[in-house]
Image (cartoon, rainbow, N blue to C red; front, side):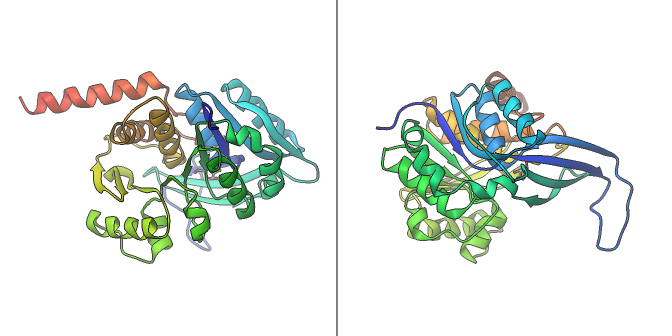
Length: 316
Ligand code: RIB
C-alpha cells in the first residue's frame, strides 16, 4: 500500500563548479571567474528541492567512504532529508561532477559516477519496504538501470506514483516506461528518446505521444524559458514559464520534478502543480550552484501571486 511523502532514488554528486565568461573550446585555456564545491547530483538535488518545499523526503543512494560522502550526509540531514537509506561504499569515491557555468547561466557537466554505480537491484530489494511506503517516487538515470527498474517495480506494485526524469538521457525500454506515471524529458532528451523533431509545441506533442504509445502514463516536456508541455491520453496543454534572471541553470530540471511531486502530493491539479514547478525551477536558477537558490514553498507561492498581479496590472 502506498503511504505518504516522497522517496528519491538516485545519484549524489559533489559538484566542482567553475564560472567562466564563455565555455572553453577544445585546445583553449581561459581564466575562470570563480570556483566552488557544491552538493549536487540529480537525485540529491531532487531530494533537497522537495525538502525545501516542505515535503517529507527520504533518499536512497550510495556515497563513497570519503570526506565528500560524510559532507553530503550532513547536508541531507541539515536539509531535513531522511538519510537513513544512504549506503557508504568502501573503495568507492563519492560521485563527482565537473561543471562549467558561463555568463548566460548555461552549463556543461562531466560526471564521474563513483559510488552511484553501486545503487543496483540489491538496494531496491533492501529498501523495498521504504519504496512501497511513499506516495511518490522520484527517479533519474545517473545510477545503474537494473536498480532503477527494480526500484520502480517495487514502488509501482505498491501503488506509488513514479516520476521519471530521463536524465542523463539513455534508452528507456517499454518495461520501464510502463512503470512511469510521469516521464519528464527536456527538449534534448525528448528528441534523443524519440528521434523526432521537438522545436515547436506541435512537434513536441507528437514526440510525447510516441512515449505514451511506448507505455508512459503521461509526459511532461520541460522547455526551460518556454515552460512545460503536458501530454496524456486525454489531451495536452502548455504551461508558461516565469521570467527570471538566470545565474546558473544547473538543477532547474531537478527542482521542477521535485516541485511537481510536492504540488501533486499537496493536492494540486496537474496544471497547478506544473505552474508551481515552473516557478520553483525558475527561482532555482537565480543563484550559483545546484541547490543554493532552491526555494521554499512561500517563495514559490509569492512568485506565482506576484506574476498574476503583474499580468493584471499590464491589462489595466
Ligand atoms: O542536474 C544537475 C546535476 O547534474 C548536477 O548537480 C550534477 O551533479 C549532475 O549530476
